[in-house]
Image (cartoon, rainbow, N blue to C red; front, side):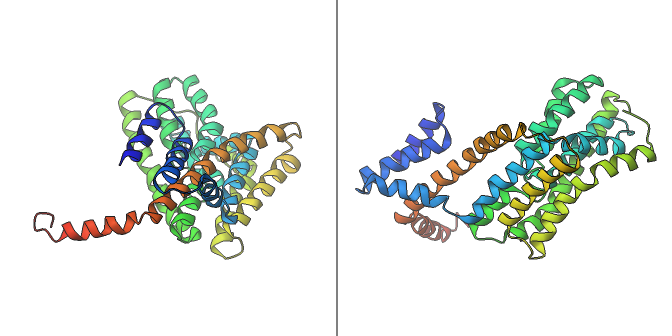
Length: 312
């Protein structure tokens, strides 16, 4: 109990989650279990010694490549041509673009970082309140970890031993429902605040935008279809997504430059390190809980009290 309190105190004073977990776990291993500190280091390293976890930096790198290659601009233009003619059009565009990009990045951070800047600026220039634009962008970006391919599903699948392909298939409908719920809310606010249309609907503009974004839209089809069809593992799908995004940006769209590569790799490394560091720290805490038989003791406690008529 003391170490749990210590962990929350460390987090409360601003220590990073992974560092706090490792520090608490290390103290417990040395002081309570009487083991060598190297055991803790070994468990931390073992936590990320997994081939499927390579899918995380691969999908993050693919998302960065798409941002640098301007694919987000093409997605935004397509969404705008589809729903921009509705009252409150840019708000709908915000959500629809996030749903489309979610099928390529699998990350809320990539969505907010890539599309977010475009969406907020466009909504602000069109007369939308900045707080509404920012709040909607933050909310719509959370669709990223739900619609496949999802980095969160990769982590959960590895931790729980569940089929990642099955999780991807199961995430599609909830992601669409989240987008639909946000659009229903937008309809209410658009009527209340009298938001206007962004543009007139044009079949020519829609066809042109679709043609420009078509190859990018094939990314989720190839990735998810490949995983569900047994062609790719999630890690191989992530590697293919990187290759596909690079070819699109460098050789087809010609918007990705060699000078961009070091920056996007460094950005990906920082983002991936944050996620993997937490996974590694969690592995140490999980090992301690298992070694101390905490799950068994907790289950026995629940069974004991579940016999009480008051609990039932």
